[in-house]
Length: 123
Image 1: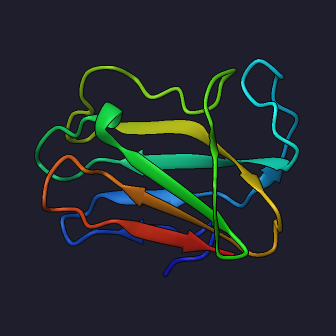
Image 2: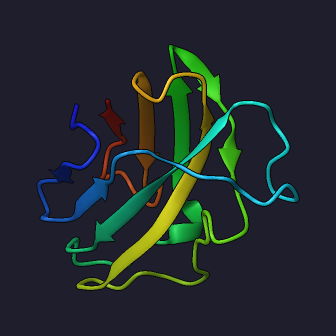
């Protein structure tokens, strides 16, 4: 598995990078939990030869082997409608809660097709 900050490439040349976790304070309207909130700079470059659908992307977070809730809103997880054409890139922040910033996983699954398997970034 790639580490946070590293880039993963599928056989078709499509790449994804999940930056290292950054502690942040989300607006209380979007997160009212009692765990530490973190965000990751997510970058995807589509070189698949076909469009990808960002609204079908799935993210799953874990910390200390426990599932963590995602944070959506306020500039976090702003997935665009429509498709991401071949040759285009997408950059956005993905957010979640954590119990241990040094023991985290973030799985990304494009879910758009069978060409791109899920990839899990780890600390």
